[in-house]
Amino acid sequence: MRPAGRPVVRLLGQVWLWPAVVMLAVGGYRLGTPDLWRDEMATWTVATRSLGDLLRLLQHIDASNGAYYLVMHVWTAVFGDSTVALRMPSVLAMAGAAAFVALTAERMFGNRVAAVGAGLLFTVPPEVSRYAQEARAYALVTCAIAAATWFLLRALEQPTWRRWAPYCVAMALAGAGHLISFSTVAGQAALVLLHLWRTRGSVDRRLLWRYPLAVLVAALPVLPVVLLGSRQSDRQLGWIEKPSAGGLLHFGEHLFGSHLVFYAFAVLALPALLLPGRRVQAWQALLLAELPVVGVWVVSQGDTSYFIERYLLFTMPAWAVLAGGGVGAAYGFATGLAGRLRLRSGARVAAGALAVGMLAVPAAAALPKQPAVRYVGSHNGSEEPFRAAAAVIAAGYRAGDGMAAPLGDQSWAMVWPGVSYYLPSDVHPYPVFVAQSADDAEDLSPAVCDLPASCLGQGARIWLLVLGDTRDPLTAVPDDEAQALRARYGTPDQVTPVGGFTVALLDRDS
Image (tube, rainbow, N blue to C red; front, side, top):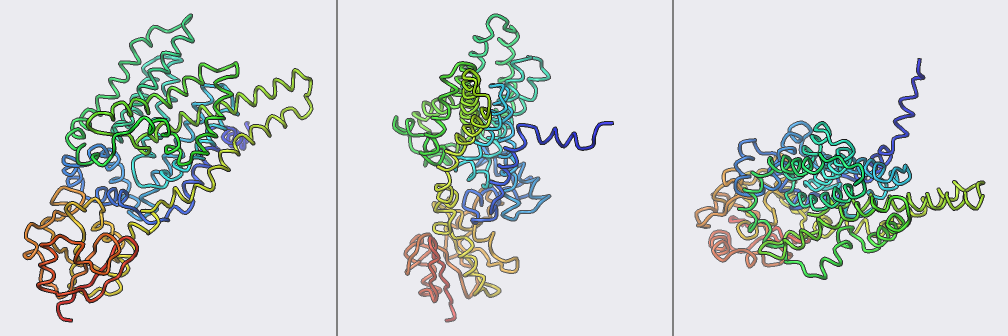
């Protein structure tokens, strides 16, 4: 009989395990803090609707995130909608991405040091840890693209439909989760062409038509999302500026969340690109990382821009694979040199120390930047203090109170759902200036009332929330709403700035 512990030993020896465990630890660290910000509030307000309401909303807005919202709808039905529950799928997905990064590096470079190094390096960039802790689709898309790359490499080795099928599924999930991720096909096509060139003496001719056909099959389920998303792009993407040439040159610094970490990754990649051994594979990884970025930059020169770092986070696995290949190449060169010089004693120890040192440099560079990226302004309670505003209302709430929050042109701030999320379950202010609830309006936020005076309700008191810190909140609302409030309530009795919002209490009886 085999010893009972042998399967455990084999598991512990898998190159994907430790990167996944480290990513789980990084992503899980203080997962409940900071508070949810406005994009995460969009996830919450959509995912917790009925399935019918969710599908109707996608016909008007956010179709590009529809697959993610459906996943989160099922998830929240099972695990609830706490902050940790909402963010946990992203943690798990980013851990899966780290595992696939290690497997991809092992297959490309044939080196366990490269594999483990790539997986661990993937956990380093501040932007990776940030989106591992955000209730948005970026982590799931990154995992799907990392998986698709590994499945593609397996299919290139043996192009049977059994191996192409998981590639198609992974690409379809990525495209349905975020359309921009399908730009990775540009990098994959370059990878396939270099593979055909490298294996030109023994190329399997089935690759010439099976890869394009697999991409087409993967694209078919994404077409409905493309059609819906194209009609919604002006509303959702109009705020993204057209990128300049300088934006392309410096994009890596924004993608990584730290220019020092980006430069460290670039330096780590050099041994893989320059040292003999697996240079073709290194160039495959480089093109896989770069071509989607260049492609999106070119497309963004048109009427609609898509060029923003989080939309291209799915290229990070390729960067990690390339940097891990550099670590593996340097390790192999060091051990080979020691062997030629007959310095066998301690050679592997020295080479191992070199590899660890190479991994430690970007990790050390990332540490000072981690808090700044993780706790960006809107996360840190300085711009979107939903919890603080809710606490002010809850402390002074009386049954029958109303609440007015920014809607219409300011609905992007997600104040209404954000504050509602943090209000206690027994605090239910009625909506003021609201013509339809968000569900009925089939939108992310309630629809604003065209005649404010008729939508004040009968409450004696109204809690008014406005954007910004101000001592005169009535000047921060539309004129017709301010006029209706002054006519019935006069001036506010209580004004409380909470760092990005102001909460005011208007009391007719005071």
